[in-house]
Image 1 (cartoon, rainbow, N blue to C red):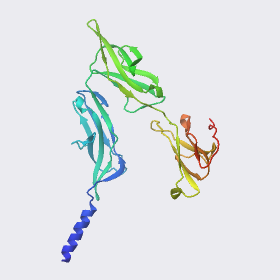
Image 2: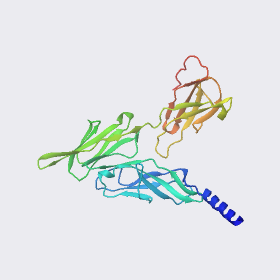
Image 3: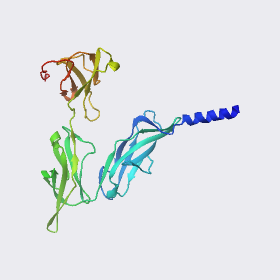
Image 4: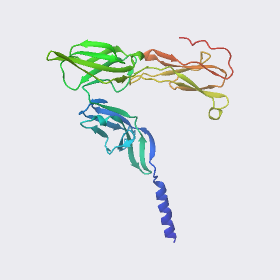
Length: 308
């Protein structure tokens, strides 16, 4: 009887030790384009790769998804061969490996959208948004090598650039926030005393600021910080290309600086009424942005703008 009881307990413990639901790690997988591009002509091929940046160099299996549907492919790399328009969609991946506590999965990657174009022209842009100040370069790519003599670029249906010759690379200068919009291109060539043209579908172009305007958050929850303290958090979007120069944060009360610069976007200060603000600064890029002032406690009047 004791042997049967021990066997039953051991069986139960073994069952409890391997969870039925996989554990999700803090790692997030990412999808990289190995060959091809995010916008391709029908009949072309694109190759994607699932990357898990694991400091322990563990061995991972890979799950691939189109939308919310899991695909049969399980390798690190994923191909779309001889593509058709129906192959267009948002693709993502997830890492999976076996451990002593059962299967562990990474967080799913952000989706990468592949567009398969059945037309004759594609306006090709970089996969990442442009950043203010970067060269705004695009390519009007054609399905066949037509002897083009003119290329026109449109923004929101309005012509913004025209160039003569066979060069299909379009350079518009440095990007600004006003350059965002839907872009398309038209290429023309002569054949048998006629001018023929093809035009691409519209493609969205996004432009990001290097440093967005900070937003100050005041966390004054007593249970978390203490009765006489509060936490200032400076939220900002920093979009510099790697390797990005360091960013510093400054915190202010009534336009008077609190402490010294910090590389962290938060600081704990004495709990006191007043107008609070923060500033994010990238010295190497000569960039500096202030948040709007936020009042805490009982304050009167308005705060003058911060010094430039």
